[in-house]
Image (tube, rainbow, N blue to C red; front, side, top):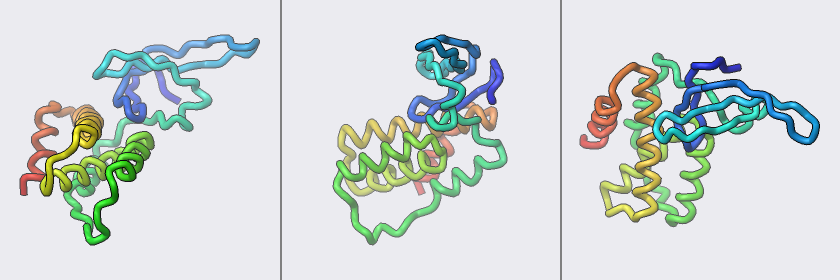
Length: 161
């Protein structure tokens, strides 16, 4: 259970701060909600406490696990399986982003960077790449207490080699 003031990650939206825990009544039943303000957009999301795990609300990645996220980015998978169509890959990427798992977000980012080496990304691919990079960079920056610029530089350097 989160406390007011704690940071939490909401899939596809990113890192937010629990601003309040409120009770609301619906159909005669009272439900408790986390009021989560997303850092990047100032969007507020109300997450039913009983549903928090189901929707993927989770704590920030632990600082000691950040290096394994970079390991995922550095891993160059065997591309012999060929590249699936964009619509199939987009579905796969969106599923990974919706999972809220930072390792899966890292996989999406890595794959799009690798595709970018061979061809110009489409508008849709660029949007997914930007979202994956934003989600990953923000969370790692907050987990490690670094600036987003420093983390972005670390990520970019992996793909320059």
